[in-house]
Amino acid sequence: MNASAPPIRIIGVPLDLGSGRRGVDMGPSAVRVAGLQARLAALGRDVEDQGDVAVGIPETSAVGSSKLRFAEAVLGTAAAVAQAVASTLGEGRLPLILGGDHSIAIGSVAGSTRHFAAAGQRLGVVWLDAHGDLNTPETSPSGNIHGMSLAVLLGHGDRRLTELAGPAPKLDPRHMAIVGVRDLDAGERALAHRLGLTVFTMREIDELGVREVMRRAIDKAAADTAGIHVQLDMDVLDPSDAPGTGTPVRGGLSYREAHLAMELLSDSRAVRAADMVEINPILDERNCTAELGLELMLSLMGKRIL
Image 1 (cartoon, rainbow, N blue to C red):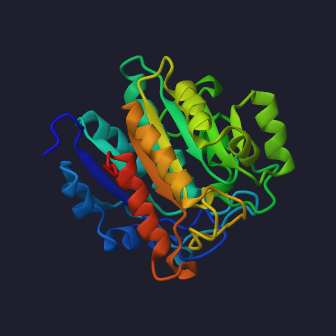
Image 2 (cartoon, rainbow, N blue to C red; image 1 turned 120 degrees about the vertical axis):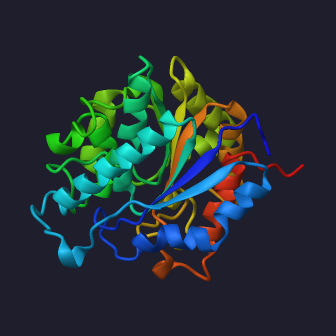
């Protein structure tokens, strides 16, 4: 047993109400089937699986406003996730949250910030994603909440979401970085510029390399904070490596670049929580995206080649 590393608690959130494609609700099961708990235990980590947070399904949930689809159901799930994450951190465990779509971050990050705020501490975030998730109901072309999650955490959007589990904003732009972006809507670009967000697009990765980009992102998120909550949206990878995701965009991180990013985060010893989201087994090929996601979580939790 690795006594120096915090024990891990796996929390499943099989939610697909925040996205426009069905099937992402099966993501947590796909990662579990690939052997996540056993593989983490083989690293010497103390790990337990809490099971899944209860979520609604489209067939029994009200769509509501077309500008904020399934808001009530997403809000209920986010509140439950926030409580689960805050409780896990309060017990000295590291929450590893399996999505589901990226709207679950509204709850998971709210839970982390609530825990650290109680001790007078701030939270840093490294957000790895092909998209900015910076839309609001006014700017979103789809009304899907998974494209609004970061904006919500920065205090922009529907107050029911921004003020979930504590006052808005949950995050300070000075303590976060977005990595791997290559697809932004006009409203997202405007908000990113207005807030002065640190955004490393794929151009920066091409020019500087993953090592330098991650060094800068980690430094940004770890400085003057209690640690980093990692957000890994699997569409940050190139679809050739991770086809099982609902919003693929060509030109993403390669297999090795993604592993290096996780290894550098692990080396920082600043990771306090992690979400892995947007694995859609319906769109996958022989569960390869879930298996890659599992491998990336192992790298984040300390697995090394030698």
